[in-house]
Every structure is written in C-alpha cells, then in structure tokens.
Image 1 (cartoon, rainbow, N blue to C red):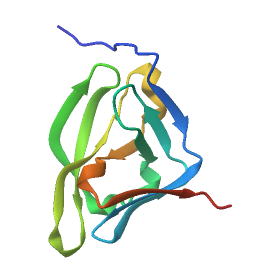
Image 2 (image 1 turned 180 degrees about the horizontal axis):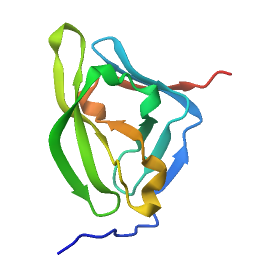
Image 3 (image 1 turned 45 degrees about the vertical axis):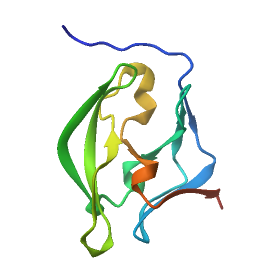
Image 4 (image 1 turned 30 degrees about the vertical axis):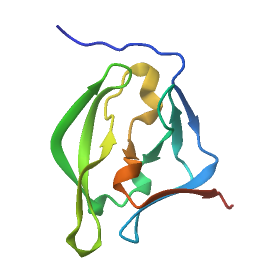
Length: 125
C-alpha cells in the first residue's frame, strides 16, 4: 500500500531571522542566514539549512532512509568532524518532500544532540 501525506496544520515552516551556525569538533559545518525553522507540536524546533550553506565536503550520504507521514522520505548523511570523528546519520534531508512541506526541499537538518552546537545569533547585514 502506498503511503501518502498526512496533513497537520499545526506544523509550520518559517524563515529564521537569525544566523544559524552548526559546529562539530570546533569545525563549522553549516553557517546560514537563510535557515528555515520548523515547529511541530510536542517536538523541539528544527533548523533546516540550505545545502549551499553547508560544508558538504564534511558529509557522506548513507543508505539510511526513514519515512515521516507529514514530510515524506528522509535521506541521511554522516558528518566528519576533526580528528577522524564521524557522526553516523547525524544529518537528514527531505529531497522530495510532500507538497505542503516543499519549502524544506534542498535543505538539511542536524540532530542537535549529535553535534556540539546549533547556535542562533543575530543576523548582521
């Protein structure tokens, strides 16, 4: 049986007005003033960062895939920090999200508990 989207009007996606920086082992993995923040009831906010603002040389795709009834299928990447440390499946992306979640296409999200920090700072012009 094919799985289709489930609509939850309480899930929101909005531009984050702040600069978002993701660090692992002191290395900046992502730095963006164009992040989107997804808010969903009962879960922490998630920052979705455009791929162009992520150091993709520090990521390697894995075979891991999960399904969300609201967003679609997620692909995963392992993050390489400094000194050879690897964080398996520490990053995910909905490469072909359901239509209602289309804004997060071409964006990546990081597990906050698997990186050293996801910082939000005032954006400077």
